Length: 376
Image (cartoon, rainbow, N blue to C red):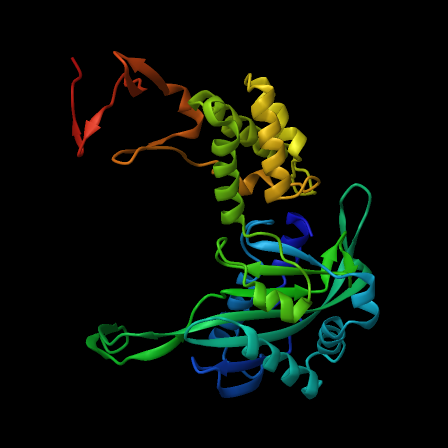
């Protein structure tokens, strides 16, 4: 799924757009025991409650593709014979009315998910009459190309809020608010099947993780029986470490600056071109950047070897997972400097009198602890 397709499904989660008739739920305590289950009709809920349910489900389609939203693929063998795929299809095809399938899914999650504290498993089913789009991109609402039937799962921590003094508007007074359990934003979840090329793709699912450092491999394994890509934050850490280790003496400020700038430029150009497909880069792309910086052949070979060992020779990476487009950071054991990524040219490194220095050009507007100072 690309960004436009994700956005198209996200827009479904409104009362006037959604065909979600009911929501299945399972509340689990920290001892992995089911506290309660429910099957609630959205039509019979108060509007405020149904809107909150839809808002929670919608969050499972939020974040960045490749970082928070990860494509999961099934093999042909799984689609034909796999128990995991068969269970997901049973949930979808029955619109969550197959009680055995629902209970089997709840048990799989409860027995394997390594989440601390209480949590809520939410399941919803929706059918979307996909509007036909002509070649020029015009949407024709009265002409449907197909019906997209899918399920969405959200797993949300349930946290205890502390007693506090609270203001009650209608009574115009402050009173004590008791400790209570509230549902937080989803920690993980998925949409099945995927909405690829604005059509049903039973070979794919879209997996969601709120934390880019954690992909809950145990959940992916039991629900999809598929490998999940390395967490985005871990990809970034490994890439940074790999550059330093492989390039050794060639890893100068200028080289790291050039890698950051060129990857950011690729991301910006891709955004400006409004490309539907996600941007990915190969090992050769990164090596091309390093070569343009004058990195030695021996360092390039070392980088080549480390890339193959950490990611795989043919693995393509998303540059959004490798660099922070909003921040450029320089760190020593005692000092951290954050620079506008577009002005990393203000910083340089030098040897002065045998001592290493980081120099920052400061023409105007210099403040120390909020106080404007004059440099003389």
